[in-house]
Amino acid sequence: MTGAPIERLFPAPGPVLDPSAAGDAQLLEWYSAPAGVDPGTPWVSFNFVASLDGAATVDGRSGGLGNAADQRIFSLLRRHADVVLVGAQTIRAEGYAGELLNAAGQQWRRENGKSAHPAVAVVSGSLDLDPAGEFFTLAPVRPIIITTASAPAARRAALSAVADVVDAGDADLDINAVVAVLAERGLLRIHSEGGPHVLGSFTAAGRVDELCLTLSPALAGAGAGRITAGPAAADLASMELAHVLRSGSMLFLRYLRSKR
Ligand SMILES: NC(=O)c1ccc[n+]([C@@H]2O[C@H](COP(=O)([O-])OP(=O)(O)OC[C@H]3O[C@@H](n4cnc5c(N)ncnc54)[C@H](OP(=O)(O)O)[C@@H]3O)[C@@H](O)[C@H]2O)c1
Image (cartoon, rainbow, N blue to C red; front, side, top):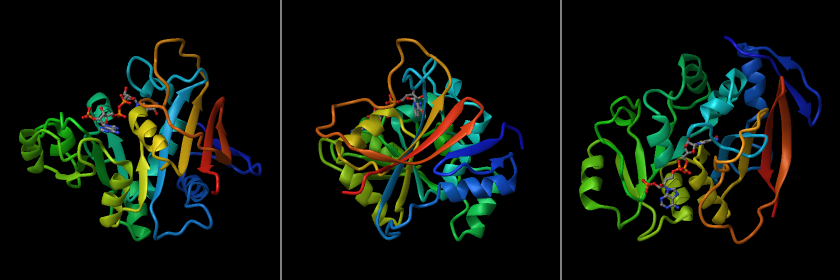
């Protein structure tokens, strides 16, 4: 394995974790389901990286903000997921072709009573996704596409050959219905990797239980958007700090929704 060590700063200074299976096991424990969360109810987490001045992308993609330590956390978070949820624009921008987990990740999931691969779900209103694209042809599990009843019928038919296309709402996507559609399939630990419009939609619906935010030590300048986008949320959703990890000058912040 490669990459810089990661250490915990809060709640208690912890060990310095070199890139190793033992270090990964500790990180997985720090990111496990919070105490008191009912394992029978849905839990929605998000993972984002942002620059110090709030940019979510550099040249249209998030990769320029990350490093090997960020990639390590990003990959480990997928291990806990029943389903990785992504917005259609992130699929179009970043690709997402092939397996989401390496062999070690797949083995860890099997050893922990999970399927080797998490399910993958994409939210899309337009269904503007290429059924012949590598996201579908290389997918280790049949993707789920969550859309609305008013989505274009021809695209729905084409995508139904390569994915399960399900509705969550009539004209507009209903975020509570998105969560319910996944929960009906037994996919309760919903882990989203964005993008900003998906986070904005879930924030507006009050359905963000956890935000894992990598703070990248860089100033991106004006131009790029934030990690959230779309219509404004009616209420401020307060979050509580669960932990702070550090690798060099990069911080990994885990926030949980404040108890209501
Ligand atoms: N910094 C980070 O950690 C991070 C993480 C992920 C992505 N990104 C970057 O963010 C950019 C993409 O983000 P984005 O915000 O433009 O797109 P996005 O959130 O990935 O996807 C937006 C798309 O998802 C569908 N969607 C989301 N919410 C919806 C709703 N409420 N109703 C109906 N459809 C909905 C729509 O698909 P249709 O258009 O198909 O209708 C919409 O265009 C890329 O540049 C990517 O690299 C950064």
